[in-house]
Image (cartoon, rainbow, N blue to C red):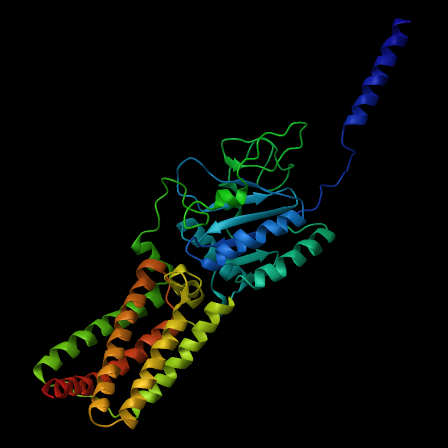
Length: 411
């Protein structure tokens, strides 16, 4: 009888074990994994992270957990995951984040004209800007889940980036285990756990992301990039910006010195509309990029998308700089018409206005050009072209404008 009881107990234990264990060969739920490169200074990054990502997570799996290193070291990598969609957010303002960004550029063969943020990489595809990413991401997630999931993109260095994101016990960044439901020291928030009496709702991951400049990236104690690090982000383009900046400063100083000595000349009036038309075309294109969230067409030098998608592309945070440029060149054209069509005192006043507008334009361009290499860390060749145009206008109009001013003073 004792032997029979032992056999019965053994059978019961085996049945319980078979009932509670996962079936052999059970497949893990499909997951879609991607990488989002961003900059805390990028207005378009704000749009993607703050407005569009929450909807994607809600549609596929629910609210995600946010994981990053809270040790106090500079943070370059963040993981957003709900067990279905996993996104590695990479801050390119950090040296480690910039290196991964450059590695993705080389690995994916990103053309120079699309070197900007936000950049989303899913599988072998990439998208840039706050228009293309929201347009493409939901469909990519849906098709990826239907196909059994999408692995992390094959970017050199991505394994080290994932390893730099600590997660609570039982949740690895590579997605081998379910998304956690308990908070740990390495997180600021997790996906809400189902419970009979849920605790008070903590701040969501997207509120936690809004820490500095309304976006991720600079936990307390993490130093920003130095000026040297920013300059090295785009060394060729930033060198060009420094040369143009020095040229504008020298031109402004030369105009003052030569004007005081009475040796400042000028150019023919017909040059003004040609330069103004070139400036209008450049400003119109920049205004279009800034107001339509489009990706700018860039040349082989510089990173105009990084500049156009920074907060400095908006004057006072509201007015696109391209629109300001259009208004400035419109003033130039209006003053030139006053010179051509006016006479007497009004013609002198128009020349003074034309010269004054050129001086203001050069001063504004000096400010913007300084920001590119030393604050933004990237240079826009469209902006450099506008700076050269307005400097040309200065040399053409300053001499006649100064002479007109002297005549007005003499009555």
